[in-house]
Length: 111
Ligand code: SF4
Image (cartoon, rainbow, N blue to C red):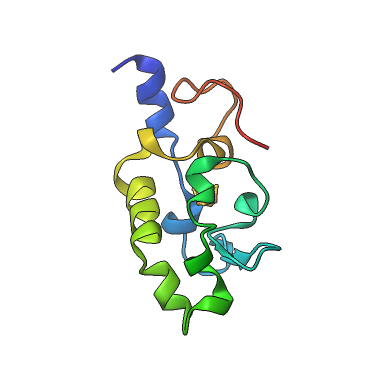
């Protein structure tokens, strides 16, 4: 593993799962009615985020928010952030990877 990637991983700080209390990044929902892990994910073309934008994961299509956050898609997403950051979405590296020029995902993130 290169020094740059090691540095990036040391600075990896996905605040939706690492912080608690008032400074934690809060869930929200986007205009299509899907729960999103944070406001940075509301409007993006990032396919690794858009996996959470499926019809069966719409808030109107479930009985509880737990049904969404415990879905296979959300558990995989959260597990990637926590345990497999090298495969985390580019959007997450952009906002929670701390710093421009990171080596892990150096091509531009989706907007
Ligand atoms: S950008 Fe990704 S890692 Fe950061 S708070 Fe949002 S969902 Fe979590």
